Length: 96
Image (cartoon, rainbow, N blue to C red; front, side, top):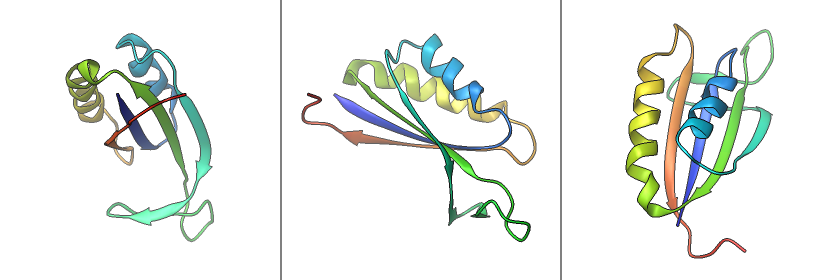
């Protein structure tokens, strides 16, 4: 099993929900209004650093990761100016 951690910054987080549903992620959790800083700059929800990030978590069978990774790359390529999508795949020993 793997845990998929997706970070999306932009006006349409539903694009990530739709991608996960379309590729059989099974279930996911959405955490809204996350704030932080990274390679694309600061996202703090203020006038100085506008915007925030939506975090998605999904635990999926390892066999699905190739298809989901390809879907993430494809979704990322289709994003508009100012939108960001990053993902990490984390090993998961158990999901109880």
